Image (cartoon, rainbow over all chains, first blue to last red; front, side):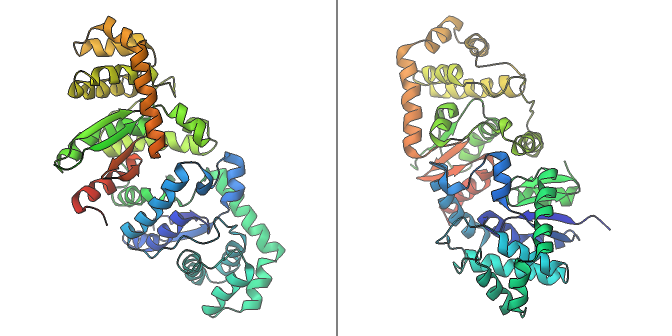
Length: 200
Length: 200
């Protein structure tokens, strides 16, 4: 059984959203599982000195243009959120809480949260909104809000972020396939070829 | 006659080197000309607050790995230069000096300079070395060194960099096709599709 693909992403990352819509099919074409791992770029950017794209002169406005063009390229609905970037803390905690019980359903939740943010322009950094998205999938709203405030869940997210940094993760999306790292939605082609050919 | 493609690049940019090896064939497949435009990222990074990849924690070491993998992906020889990054001032001035006389030969020179730096590990920021590379193409070495120190040539490069910034160029490689900007060697696929389909 080949190793699963580690898929790191931040809920505030639009390129992460694109990858989230593609990764399961990509992996399935090569008989791989995917382990979804939300991280917090805000914490990681403190280490790398990077900053969110919108604030960077010249690059920020290019990125906005590129995002819409990439969405059409990938055939995905996309609306730049009114409030951006946001902290992915609440949705990430909800994800890890659910993953501990039901990993497949947690992936469904991650996709629903991404779409809420990048298609419906709902601010998922608000625990209420994250819980509403979860409730639509049949989860208990109060349990989700409790999870977002749960010390063990908080610790789980923190340790995931620390482990990601330890592994060299600095952006979103970021894949690790058999030890090989691929950063960016524009590396999905290479990632797929790596799976097909076993490297080059 | 369709408009030419503007190809912005920095002589110290490895992804710019990859694009330089691909751009003419790509353009020719779509009956386009290419206008080569060396720029100085050092000057542009002062505006955007960016910094060269090697100095960025986590991202720097990933980039080094990605460069070698991309070189193999593109089927290009590549050796990370011992001294990196360098200022592209001397090779860029030599380029614009020659372009004013013979644009096609200037492209030949640009490719030779890129290969000198990224394949043969020769420090082309040194005007002597840039002139030696030019001499191998049959150009007069003394004339190249004089050009690197010529006030009008200096001004030409400066105005090219200013015009690039004015246009929003913030990285290398950076293409503009019929007004549409594409940043990065990982946008060559989209750039080619844009030429084929006229956008999407």
